[in-house]
Image (cartoon, rainbow, N blue to C red; front, side, top):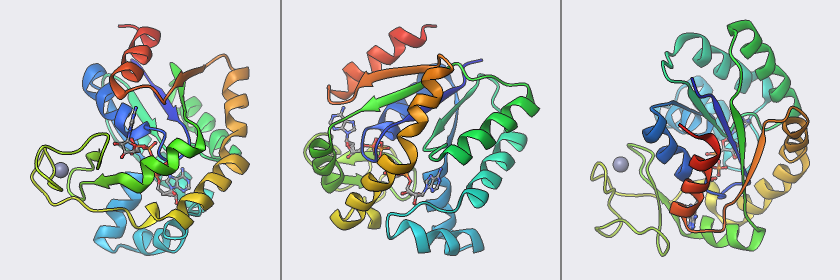
Length: 215
Ligand code: ADP
Ligand code: ADP
Ligand code: ZN
């Protein structure tokens, strides 16, 4: 069982690396951002609530997010382990996660922090395009799809995320520094933190992570 958390500022490459790691280790993906986007697309009650926060680049309240993760962890199967992507993002979420894992008798293998400078992030988010159907992520210059603006995996037309506009991105970076960054220390003290330079090309980042996690 390999149970990973992947952390990093918005646009650091969490989603990109998660996708590769999932395939390699056959992990179950739990991305709170993907869950919220799916709920918004369905226009469900949770989706409507989340939309009020996400569009502005704010965090969805902790109790809502914790309930979602708790529900997923207790119902979804993860025979080879899981990859939590975008959760926890606050101290209260980290504490809630510890409790959930304790109850389930599960421990974390490692916490990967993908580190990238703010200037690079702004460039990445401005060019990010996503597939609304399968969640694959592209970049107009760094990782363009084979056919312009069409998903390589499933053929759906790509979109730009509403929260990738600059104002929202700056707000997310501010919130990251205030609420999420302190968690790095939390996991460092537990001896779980592994920092990788996310400014390197994505294959290099991936290989560095593999070397650390092992087989
Ligand atoms: P990014 O990949 O840009 O870091 P995500 O796709 O993980 O962003 O999340 C998109 C948005 O969904 C966040 O900006 C936030 O509004 C909401 N969200 C995702 N995960 C959480 C969480 N753990 N707690 C609160 N809000 C969250
Ligand atoms: P996150 O999930 O952390 O918000 P993403 O994986 O969605 O980040 O990546 C953000 C953007 O940066 C995407 O457009 C992606 O294609 C691009 N990207 C990801 N990793 C790299 C990398 N190592 N080098 C250059 N661009 C990257
Ligand atoms: Zn797709």
